[in-house]
Length: 131
Image (tube, rainbow, N blue to C red; front, side, top):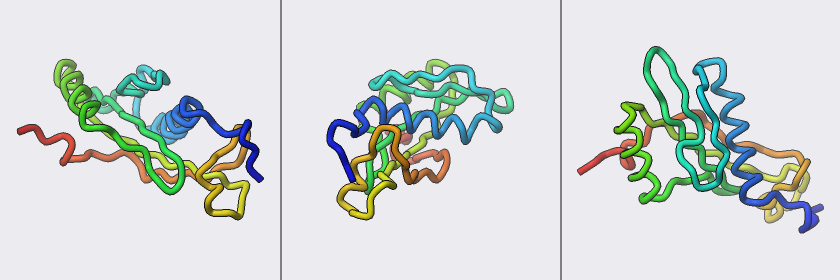
């Protein structure tokens, strides 16, 4: 049962997604820094096999996955080029697992149970292609 005062804020949802991705990459990458600020990209800077990676984590609520705006994509591409870093994306979807009502799945609650939709890191050629 959802209680409006207990819903995750946008910042809390964002931080939950970053923590989830960090948990799943920390054994594969050397994580150099994690940034949980809501409007800052990338969220995770990591290294693997002498390559620098900017990992952009975007989180949304059920039934959606987090997405990156075209303006933010342009900024991260420029930033990565400056630092000779590769870009990876992590799209995360979070659903409230404490309900049987599909409509309420879109409202994850603080200290609640969650279903997480995360398929790993990806490269998105449509966003990364420059004219």
